[in-house]
Image 1: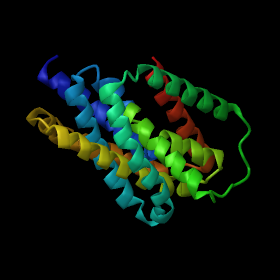
Image 2: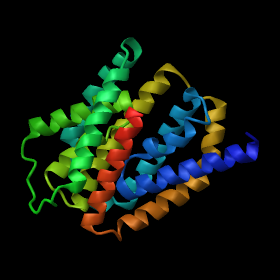
Image 3: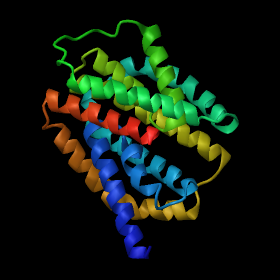
Length: 243
């Protein structure tokens, strides 16, 4: 591919991922990775997506700071921080292909079922800290193996029927901390190449534009539409792991 074509593909993938992440709070890597992993080698694409995703998360946290529920999220975060190192160890020592296939299948089946079931008309409180911590641990473990740390917390919120602002305020801090911690662990074993830093700089305009459009649209969609967006992204992300 020519340099111009690579630039257009990079910008398009980053814009799409940033838009989806700005709108839903997660799924940057699932959307952008579906394109970037076909253009760049994994050693360049993965750290680039992590850097871009963390930038989007930072913008989301600032733009929606009044809705963030850090106190409630801390229980999930504590569990997740324990799960990520285990996931990294497994990545380095065990073939995780079967796990990714199985998890992707389960997420896809749940999302497909939830899309056609009647809309829950009740709100269940997340009173059990131990269960919340366990979901956070699972999210950190799964996130380290599949780059989808927000999948389990998003499903947990859907099961409890949380409205969009409460769900976003709970899951957003969790995802941001998980991705930052995972990137820090990655950088402790290797440094970002100059090529990744250049590509990150090139992608910043598309990253900013996609994030801004997504955040604006988040404020305008209703509860039902947001729920379907989340479930649709879970279905897409799960299928990406399966296919």
